Length: 309
Image (spheres, helix red, strand yellow):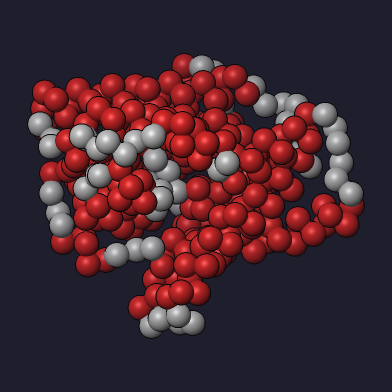
């Protein structure tokens, strides 16, 4: 219990510090917009390339590990579509926000928490999982938007280009390729990436806090509660049992459960805005999940910790 709290509290403090900086507009709101962009396009890829290129991946059963995440996403997608059609009868635009809230994950929090709880090995496993989950989640989200909205702006070709150009995907592919072929970076370059990497997670977590909109929590609806419950309770339970069925254990199992426990991604709001989703609901889901996950992740880790050893 104490170990879990000590791992979560610094992450929570950084998120709340970011929100505090936004409230007092320090240094200013424009700074945080550029800082988030710099983290996403420069620091994050540097971290992924540095960690993956220097990691030991020989002991990882990649197929079972990644398959657990893929199968869980498809199972949840079918479940959510069933609930929307036959149980909750969500309006189309609202359902796109519910879906994003119930399936997507915050990369900054995910990497920070795996690194804190499991060290570099956990970070590498998280990066490996992200390589496959990010494209799949984007494809599934676009599919949901095309089915549940009448938006005519969905351009499949542009979408796939955006996935291929995603800096996180590029960082994972470059780092993984270097590792697979045993190519070591020029030592000064490797050390430069290492220094850049050290700034990634603190700045990323501050940006998560800056992205919170506490006032939107008052938009309490059945849609918000359902998305919250599925993401922070059902998702981690499903991925745990599916991973166990695939024979995943130890740190790999812990990473999968952490992945399932993550609050949804801040970028879900951008996709909702671009493709005609319910932006106010999406903002409320992002903020509420981020705040509640501070407590739910602790409960999930304590519940399953005996299976991670």
